[in-house]
Amino acid sequence: MEDEPEIRPATSHEEFLSALTVRVTVFVDEQGGPLSDEPDAWDAAARHFVVLARGAVVGTARVYQPQLGVGKIGRVALLRDFRGRGWGLRLLEELLAHTRALGLREVVLDAQTYAAALYARFGFAPEGEEFLDAGIPHQRMRLRLHYGPAPGAPAPASSPREQP
Ligand SMILES: CC(C)(COP(=O)(O)OP(=O)(O)OC[C@H]1O[C@@H](n2cnc3c(N)ncnc32)[C@H](O)[C@@H]1OP(=O)(O)O)[C@@H](O)C(=O)NCCC(=O)NCCS
Image (cartoon, rainbow, N blue to C red; front, side, top):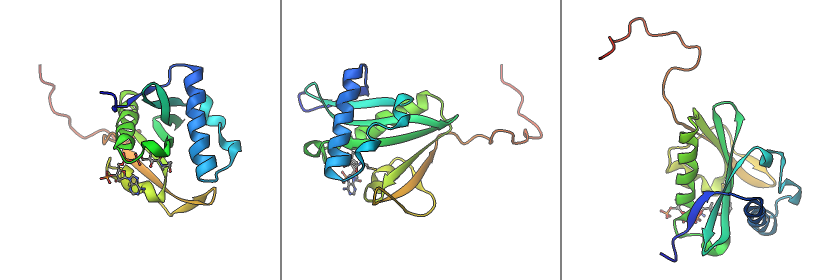
């Protein structure tokens, strides 16, 4: 269908540059953030996702691992004309599918406070106090993907017999 977006990892440097253009439009021109953050040092290590409408990049987000086993989602942005259609939710679904496929233990993000409800729908829980980044209120949020014992936790006293 023509109005359905294609959402997937960027596959070329050109697509990354288009994603960066979306970030500048949204975070610098629209929200007044610093141009010096676009790109930043994490971009080289991140997996970049693009949202394509009729072949054009209209949205983006990135995922990287600041620590082993912990994913960080960031730079979630859609050009203004493409918001309010549920594409933000679909982008989040793709990002989380990616973090699960990587076998990550948990995912964190720094939500702009106004958008925290979007992430809460996926089970992200707020953590700590609200803080300002580039003058905009943010809330750290965390989603645990695995609920097994923490690394280094003692093994259970007895384990059930393995089934054939
Ligand atoms: C964040 C962003 C990608 C979300 O995409 P979107 O197209 O607006 O969101 P969707 O249409 O998928 O909305 C899905 C849900 O998100 C939440 N949501 C989205 N925008 C919201 C807003 N401004 N205020 C409150 N909730 C919002 C709602 O729960 C909404 O559910 P609903 O349809 O039941 O109301 C988009 O608004 C954006 O690019 N914003 C500017 C960039 C930005 O601030 N990014 C950082 C966010 S941490």
